[in-house]
Amino acid sequence: MSDGSRREHWENVYITKEESEVSWFQENPASSLELITLVGATPSTVVIDIGGGTSRLVDSLVERGFDAVTVLDISATALEVAKARLGSRANQVAWIVADITMWEPPQKVYDLWHDRATFHFLTDEHDRTAYVERLSKALKPGGYAIIATFAPDGPERCSGLPVVRYDAEYLGQVLGSAFELVKTRRRKHLTPWGSVQRFQFSIFRRAPKSTD
Picture 1 (cartoon, rainbow, N blue to C red):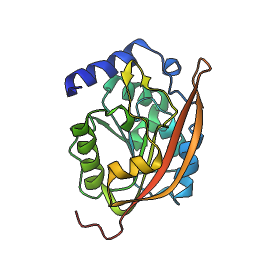
Picture 2 (picture 1 turned 60 degrees about the vertical axis):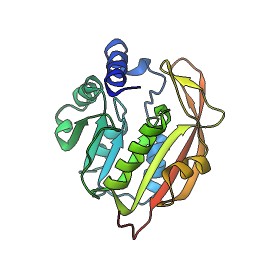
Picture 3 (picture 1 turned 135 degrees about the vertical axis):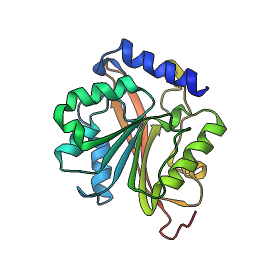
């Protein structure tokens, strides 16, 4: 999928559906918060949420005193919804409208990279390579990447698009040897209409002495 068609797809999703009408909606992003705590994140940890959209993770982080949070999403509409929900607290967050496969990240800035359900939409190998390149550039040596995708027994499609399903080992192979698997957990997500989606949440640590 090209950058333009991908952007058009997600803008249409967020224009035509309310926040709680998408399958990935969570009132409480408990699984993400659990793993963020597990890696030892503190309010000074520099965090980026990839494909954050209208996710309420940013609300939870701001409420916990995190003061260096960035949210990136391809949909400007989604980010405007999140900003409106946060109100004046939105000024405490950096917002980036970008396709993750096209984004030009800063060098070794982030301590923690979080992605719940963006990576599995990258079905083209070129896009996956572009994602890993940006992860490798943006994440500090010794930093953590928390990546959640549909598990091998999860859905084959989402939001009308095909996905790639992963277990932690396969995901690690795609990320490459610079990223060590620290922890993986399976989770069941209940959609707003009661369907069960099976996810895997994995923590990877970037090699502390990485120089790329």
